[in-house]
Length: 350
Image (cartoon, rainbow, N blue to C red; front, side, top):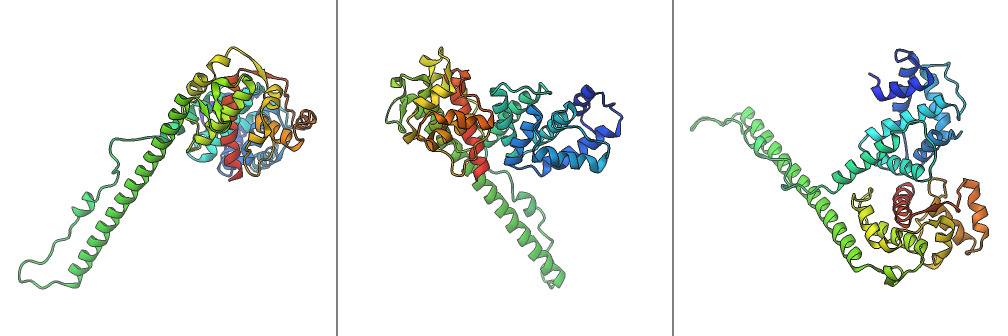
């Protein structure tokens, strides 16, 4: 059954809820979502927000045509953009790292102020990231999730005193021992997995909190409060924050921590251009294999600034990705975008 949200979105292009077209788009969207990669997610978001004609649009067009040969919208047609939104919807419903990538890419597009045909997509992305963040850092009271007790209750009946043990008795006993041993192994694995997760969550929390309380940038070897340029502070703080994370999603406290560190600079607006040019390029560590992209505006700008050795020509270079360095943001917003971009870029280059 097609989800009610999908039906509602497609009605915007006068597709009747009972039309085979709705089912064709939904079936194709689920297929594309199942095969999605971090790189294709960027293309899907571009198709949804910008109506871009790219590989994801082509793949979706072919997939829908397998179900409905009359489907032939241009990439910038509203129906094609809505179909791409349906793919993102199904990706966000999943429980894989690709759902996290989709969330980051959607929020990046939203941060850039790009228009989109489905208003709740950004909300869905935020909700998915919040759920995955909590699940990653979950620290339950008990670490044992699998018990051997059930297996032990299945102990087979043995022969009465003085009676001979048959082959059937022997097989039942062996099966019982194997089942009990497997149950114990599963319990041990579950305990180890949860303990490892809890230790990662605790280490991350301690690292972030001590760093935030100290207000000291090891990257720059100076107090963050002493960085007078708001753009420089935002990029540096965002980069260092991302480096301290141990999970794919930023913690729910990200905004609050960044706001505390950049509070004195919160009233100022800073352009991406000014922020990049104020950042010492020698201190910039970009993800290995980074491929510049419109949805990675800060890292792409830093990448080109490094490539052009800080010369002003980097601004012209990033225009090929339609990045607009003159746009202004608050330091906290810029820093959070830096965190988001690092997480997305690391996922793409793993």
